Amino acid sequence: MSDRVPVLKIGRVLLVSIQQDLEDQMVMDLQDDLSRRIVDTGAKGVVIDISALEIVDSFVGRMLADNASVSRLLGAETIVVGMRPAVAMTLVELGLSLKGVRTALNLERGLKLLRRLGTDPA
Amino acid sequence: MKCGNGGTSTPALKVRAGRQIEILGEDDVAIESSTRLLAEKLTAERETFLSQWVRTIGEDLQGRLSMAELGRELGELYEAILQALGTGGLDGRGERYGEVRSLLIELSRNRARQGFTPTETARSVFALKEVLEPSLTGDQEGARAYLQFARLLDDLGLLTTEAYVRTREEIISSQAEQLLELSTPVVKLWDGVVGVPLVGTLDSARTQVVMEKLLQTLVDSDSTQAIIDITGVPTVDTQVAQHLLKTVVAARMMGAQCTISGIRPQIAQTIVALGIEFGDIPTNASLADALRQAVAEVAKESENDARGLL
Image (cartoon, rainbow over all chains, first blue to last red; front, side, top):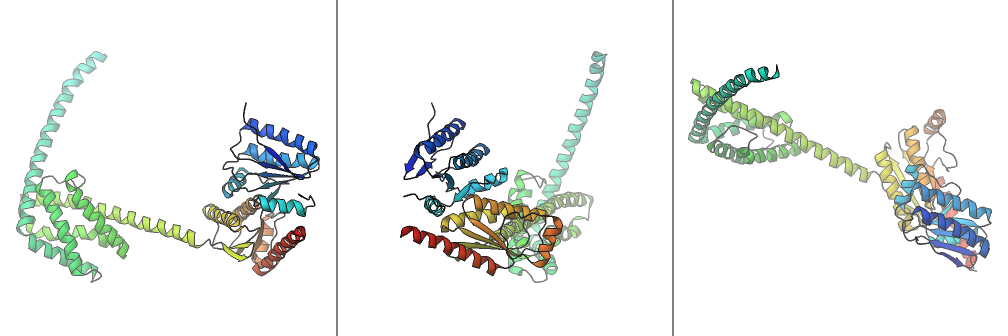
């Protein structure tokens, strides 16, 4: 069985910190876990920290975009934080622009952005 | 049929091979005697030849290189050639001429750096022919030796040109690299605002460097606003626009807002005429406007933060 990415709850925000390169199965598990947790906890915001990721392929890129759409349907804002410059450049070269996904430079700014959007991460 | 063919061709081949060996042997003997003759001549009249050589080239270079320096260089070269001749052989690409070749490459490098022409560099070698001509072409044996030596010098002359060109290319590529570094500074304009004043044409290589530097600076300085100023970009075609868009999208994916400023009237018209879509990317006519907006944006963010704290 492959590892799962932990989904942590802080107040009304779910924090997903991806610490290792993702295999396809992990990506799909994460998508399942996250949507279930949003419904269970009634979270209003999701922060996905990818600062440890050195490689983001098109599959993971699409997962990020899909997650944002799914969370929005469930009433939560998703913010992807900590993308590395090299990763951003790779995604651009792949033709992905993560339209519709909110981003922030780091976790702190991501939480601030959520607060500004009206989802108080108390 | 096959058997017959094989049978007739084998003796013919043998004969030819035998003849070849004989000819080669003659050549070897000839080269050996020429080499000996050359080595004797060069040793006997070392002072005369060397001073004449130095003088000929000195006249060519017209004092752009000191005579002492020239004398030292050519002296070393002369000794190396003499030594190679002493061990036998006239093959300029052979092992025995390794020392000569490295000296020549060094000489060509220096000439290229000092701004001499390839002709002047190659002449350093060819001038030795002129020096030797009068004293060798008297009799038949000497003439043959001279011709063989001339062939060797031709080879060495070509080598200098090759080394010269290689040095020039090294200089050019290192300058291009420096230019790339110089032309893409990322500056901090305000707290949370960084700017890139672009000067010159944008190609993929430069875009890559600009993008890399800009994104890294965003992370390092924790800035949320970036301004790319294209006042210094002479023309914007679809390619350049594409590169700019990529940079903006990459910055946005990292969570920063990227503005393009410094679009001159002419450029704006070209962009519209070419049908380039900048989409929802914020653009400004002047850097000042872009900066004002960016600062306002940063202020709004921090105001919100402050309210959050209370």
